[in-house]
Image 1: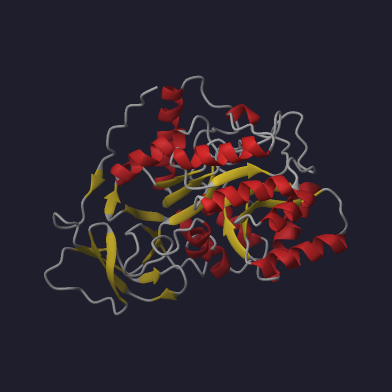
Image 2: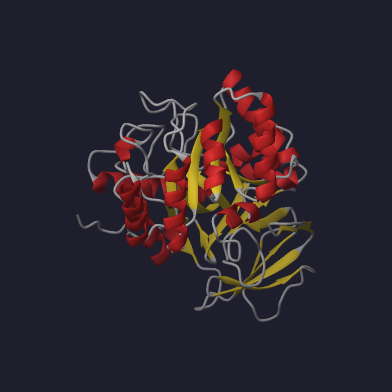
Length: 393
């Protein structure tokens, strides 16, 4: 069907016709380090210079964000589901579903999330929405779409339409995602309790099948994200060469020694772990969080995803809260902040232009009150959001 685009969202320009302007704040986190007053120069939606003296440039339209403000890169959510709402299945028709996805995207942008890696939708609608936000950045974050997640017959997320069984079907599934303009491939390496009849402690694909997907995706220039709760699925996905391990819950009872060995292998491999902290209390959450603490202690590459839309306690726009939850596990605030900026951008393959405030990067910014390294609750004090140099109302 033909989908009509949304009307542009109201946004405020910040400078001249080509977007030339300067933003000054009393603090700046550039994705790596925190500094004092800084002035960021923007033109045509990109950062052209960063002055860490905080000087006011002559002849350039200036927005002074205040001495108590901190400018940082727009947040990067490495795992969200714009097509889902509190875990509910998508609406019956594509037109209504896309309208709901637009609302979810705007909600994320309002929270300072300027890049979203959509880990799984229905009907490749996230790719369609990605084209809309690329044409008009005021509509929402930049969206990196995976399309329907590849899964087994009856496996986790099968109702989204990405079922593929056998080598030929897996290769064709990867090729379809490339042809439809997806930015990555998601494969359900393990089950998930949110799908009836699916077991999160069991693998869904063999190691060889995962290798088939990775080989074809990499040949086409696409990264692979493996949804993996089960320890066996984590081990197989790591051996297959996936680019990120999503959730990494270590379920299945393979034994403490084996888990520790695998965690060390992950840390040494450089493979990203897309962490999704668990809110509910209990043995499951305790086990997941113990694994996350171990991986962080071992120096694994960490990024954080909200898994927004996948459950009632994960509405869209809650990435700042998830960042606080990661820090509550004992992860240092600087590590947690990198996990939603520079490290998250690197996981998404956008490290040169997202998740940082440097010359050449996209002019996507979140402005908050206070010092985020003194207290990550400052992420909730949103003063302004800029997307491609446009200040969002």
